[in-house]
Image (tube, rainbow, N blue to C red; front, side, top):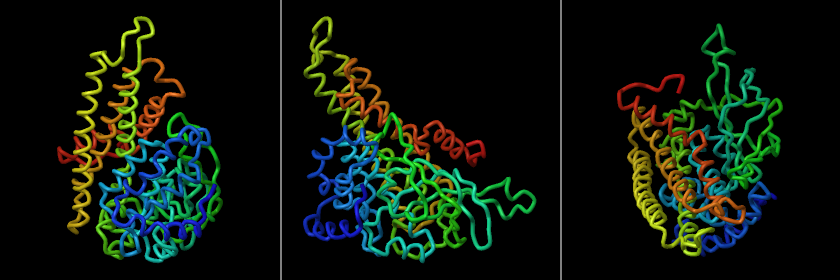
Length: 410
């Protein structure tokens, strides 16, 4: 199952010249047909095939958003997300794993320089994952914390060498009730520091291998910890240690940017399948041709218009975020919450496209052999991710426009 580090480095060296001057989408293009042909098997295995992971690494997804200072490609955010969208159309589970693993390099420079050295010891093709929801409550001890318990939903974890872990740490500033009040923290754990338990049985994104991670009395020194607030507003221990626009953007804000790319990629696939189906479809009773159905024409045209609009808006938001990093201007709290609230809008509207076309595709669209049901299931799963919670984002954005801060109930 694993893709060995030595194999990755050797293959990557062979691919450097071949990929020179090509975008990430162009690099992955030769493998798309092969990856698409394995989509059903990927779902059946409930995990990404090793061959798919090799293609992702060799094309440069892991190094795409790593700073040039550590040997990374440091591509524009829009180039990375275009490639994730392209890959998702071929196989949503593969697109998801490429997106979620490839989005993590910008997190590394926020941490202690010693942590950075460990993670990038073998170069920028290292595979980084996460289990970011702070489900475990740590116990304080001299010089650090003790971590025991289960964190969940670590997509592609079988291939990751390091995992970014969310954790709740007792609030030492509250002497009366330190274990009633917790502060969210994050740290990087090496693959040797936890066990993986296969719990991934899901209706959507079946092939992502999003398993549980089990920790047993792991000691984490204080210098390896960062508060979520420090990561949000760029005052973590590693701030300024790597000179790159990638490192000047709040990582939690960067992380959620890959989610719309997955939803849009699913919508792209649904459009293609809808067109193919309408051309050959006949009504079961009347034998009327689907290609002549005016309702189908309208559903298709509206979906195309919506996707074109979302694509432009998505790029605008990505460019806005990148410009903040490039300008070196601090991201205000108001701007942080504004941007944070807008990614779910794109995902929500892309899923609306999926729903519109799926409803007009007839009963056979739900059959296992029909790709439409996969796009619909997987796109809907993106919408359910906490980073795509549009109800919550609307409340955040509305409060922000009125000069109000998020409340604890949000």
